[in-house]
Length: 355
Image (tube, rainbow, N blue to C red):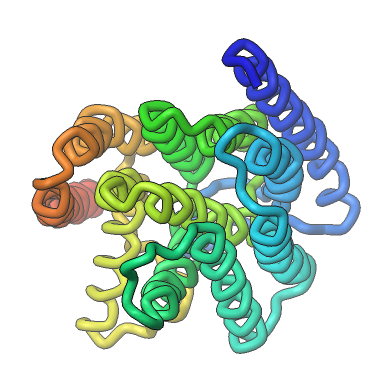
C-alpha cells in the first residue's frame, strides 16, 4: 500500500470514527432521558444539574469501527485472532458497563468481567508479537502476568477519573495522538491509524461532553476506554520494547492521580472502594475552579510536561527508564503540591462562607 493510500485509509477511518461517535452520542442523550439514566447532583458529585449518562457507547462503537480495520488492514497489521480477542475484551467491558449504567451491579461480578477482559486483551497484545529466538522458556507467560494487572487497573482508574466534564475525553484524545506520533516515528501505519482513530472518536464524544456537558460517558465508556488505552500502550511496547517507558509517561497524569488518591485513602483508613471527591481534579473543582478550568490544567500539564518527557524517553532509549521513573516522581510531587494548595483554598473559601 502506497503512502498516499495509507494516509487516505487512515483519514477515512478517523472520519468514520468521529462521525459515528458523534451521531451515537447525540442519540444516547434522547435514549438516556427516556430510560431515566440521569446522574443527579449530590455531595459526592461535581455537577450541578441532572445529566444523562451512557454517552460512552457512541465513543466505543466509533472507536472500534475505525481502529479495528486500521489494525488489521494497514501495513504492520495485527493478526486477526488478536484483533478479534481485543475487540471482544473491549466489548465485554462496555457491555457490563452499559448494564451498570442502567441498573447498578454488585462489585464482584463487575470486577470478574474486568479481570477476564483484561486477560483477553493482554493475551491479544502479547500473542501478536513473534517470540524471539533467544527468549527464555515461558517468557511470554511472565509478560502476560505483568500485563494483566496493568490492564485491569487501567479499566478502573479511567472509571475513577471520569468525574468532570470533558476530562476523560481529552485524556483519551491526548494518549491516542501520543501513540500515533510514536508509531509514526517507527513507520508503523497500523498503530498510527489506531492512535489517530482513538483521538477522532474521543473528539466526536467531546462535542457533547465538553463543559457544560450534555451527557456523561458512563461506565459503558470509561472502563472500555481504559482497557483500550492500555492495549494501545501494550501493542506499542510489544513491538518496540524501548517505547514502553514513553507509553507509560503518556498515561501518567491519570495514573498518578488515581493511584496516589487510592493509596492516600487506604493510608487514612477510608473506605477506598466507595464514591468520593478526593482526586486532584475534584479538589480543583471544590476549590472554586470550573470544570473547564480544571480541564485546561490537565491539558496544559500533558502538553507542557508529559509530551516532552515522553519524547525524551523515546529519543534516548538507554535512559528511558530513568526518565520515566523520574517523571513519575515529579508528577507525584506536583500532585501533592496541587492537592495541598486546593485544600487550603477550600478552607479559606469556607472561612469566608464561599464554599
